[in-house]
Figure 1 (cartoon, rainbow, N blue to C red):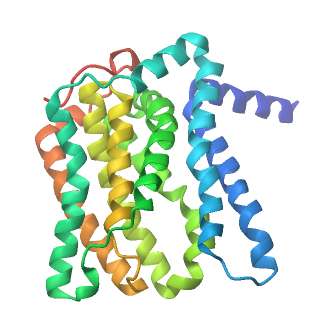
Figure 2: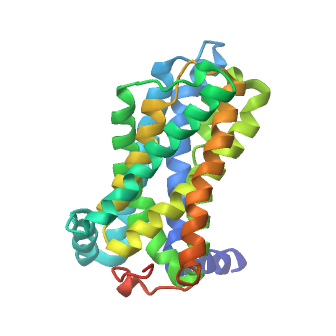
Length: 287
């Protein structure tokens, strides 16, 4: 009876806070997918190749979208799916809300330029065209879950600012499995500080993304913001950087991006601390 009662309590918690179920399933399924790809290589003592990293990216790209859509249907039915689709097709927003998309390439180029002058010419911007596709896949599909399903429900419980930072933290730590399995050997002692600075910069990105999303009510704008962030990093940051140089870049980039996010918090902090009902998520709250 105790076990049953505990199970019933867990189910009750998941019903009241469906975002918990989302995070549990998204972490579990994506990480299992990564392990299926990489563990045979690790057990065989084989070198991890770029193709292996690409295969691990497949469950990472698509799991948030699949789980987000399935849970939307489970909790909200066809009405929820139509509403989710409507947010994904909402491109008719004020022109000024397309401008934040350019924050990311501008900040990246600025940081690379400063590091190029002060540290090493190795920081000169690099154009890796497949990075555009990486950005599109990551931003478009991941945000179906992170912003399409989890965030609107979380802010009913925790408010906007706390939910923004929690999603930013969880969405970044979610990258732990492929990052640890795929890059630990190459980064060595720099792996942990690199990942820490990556978390810092991605939480700043989440603040900017949520600011755009709540002012437009458009999931598409959140997707485009994420695409600009990941795509610009993949496109412009040189692949030839050493682990120490790459770690230094993310430290500087995190500081630069938090300067922008900090200005948003400074100007709109009161609004960010307020909880917004899910029915009012299309309201402009940051003006």
